[in-house]
Picture (cartoon, rainbow, N blue to C red):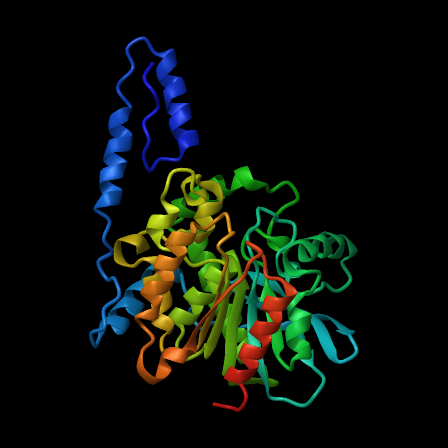
Length: 380
């Protein structure tokens, strides 16, 4: 049997294909499959790659909204309910419910300072992590849920130096909201695991939906629910996320320019080429579907979408030791992004390089809070 060909296919997939080949007496040559995919990848050019020309942003944003925010927001009332409130000294913690994209009731955790408002606000967006029993609890300590608190505390220790990001933000004067993405926390099931994700994504596509599109649409609804709170200043609202939450943060900021004034995104920015190399996690199916918008790649690369945030403030964290994102491709993505911020607004794009890989430690958190304070030092 010949050696397995090298190419853009996930090597694990190629190995399985060649194992099948070994069982057949007259099996076809699979080398052509990898060759064909390699050729498609070499020819990849997004139709709406960033341009400095007038009108590019309007066209790109319209296309991205159509492909990302599916089914979007129909403007239905949120009907928020407060299910529980807890006094946490200098702030209030609330467990809420509101009506999300398809009419379902979605749980949220909300923190608000005790000082008089209106307050700047942050929509916090949780990571993937292949850990589905917790979602919003990775960012805000839950109320009256010891089992989730125990699980979340270990997660927070691993990725955030033991600090719930929501508590750091509310103590800096921000109102904070976090929801579960579909498939996490209260929107999962006890036995939902990594290998169930592809079936969920396929089921939704059979219904004319996409997993990533529903997540993006619920994020938009959550943003609008947060902005509608009486104690929130709707002109000082940011999105912030880590890992998959970073992608959710910058894509929402890109597509809602009138509603998001700043964005903090930690450890999810890379060119598509960098994520399509052999062995890349996006080629393994499963987790990729939570972040994969059908048709978007033909129009825009990841940095092209994030460039729609310009000239508003964007803070990115990246690390050379992050094993999920090839560093050269991260740098390429950052260079592409930098073209969109120029002239007097160039300083609105900030990039912080961290040494500790795929995590958002206490030092980076402090930088993010200080950066947000500078963005929101006075009402817009």
